[in-house]
View 1 (cartoon, helix red, strand yellow):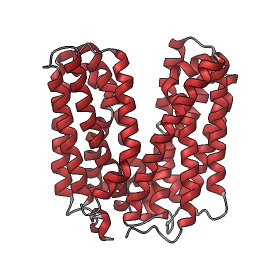
View 2 (tube, rainbow, N blue to C red):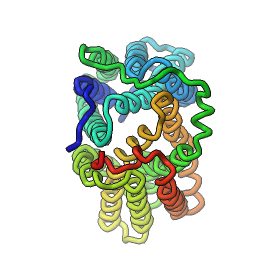
View 3 (cartoon, rainbow, N blue to C red):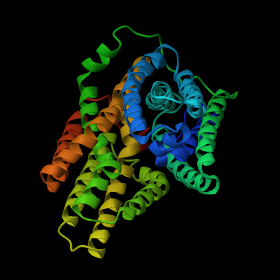
View 4 (tube, rainbow, N blue to C red):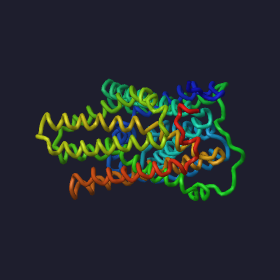
Length: 406
């Protein structure tokens, strides 16, 4: 039987708040640049440059969040990320120039970057053993469901009310962050910290932990793989396979629905698997999906290629399901409690790096030779899988052990 820690009262407020937060995000994420352009009235080119600059500035919030989590506690930082993003979205309708745009977008970007190490640290602090894997899986399920619902509500708001709908989205998203912060502050919640004092050494100790940094290096390959659906596949499908752009929406919907429905069932199949081995299996399935995507180019245009893309996306989605929970639980279990914030901040930087590298990297490789993108990604994943199996005996035994054994 998988058991959560005795601090179980904290789970429900966290999950409800996280669901509301994701629902709000789902309102604007599918229309991010268009949303900002419509709310601010600025030219789309100005919005693009401003958002890119703001995202770059927001990267600094990731390591800062790690320090604050270790010095204070995860819940305080998590509430802080909700509050500053609520403020940012509430201010969007008042933006009237490039400077204010960068300032507001940077505040939101900082909140986004700080959220992930804070949320990961909070889960790690209020759960243990197999319960930690289960809560990470629940979190992923709830966020995917909420993103999907948010997207539908966003489309309805814009279609029914026109430009006013974009302002409504900004307001509702701000409200969602306020509600999420209130949920975490309700009686029965916990601060989400096992810290024994902010130990000296800080990030130097994290970077000197060679097994953990090996895990981060392996995770970077998986992060690039996760970005295929949103960054690499659209370029490949439209420019190389000549697939209809509308198909991308279908593939994204299939992926989102299966991620929401499959996370907990897949997680149950991993109860007897060591987390490093579960991740290595996910890597193997990712490699298979790369091979299937590449092979789709060999199929005749039309329905055969569409079927090939759907089949490859199903395999890709299975790989995501296999990777999500064990990766998060392994990183959290490897981190010493007193430095968990810093450890998870470094682990989450793989997403920041991936979002910078993937667009240019995938585009360049597709420009040289379309199969190159899939070959390079498969090679990186193969190296990551081999590294994970070697790390199995070097990482803390309790972190690596199968969830069902705890």
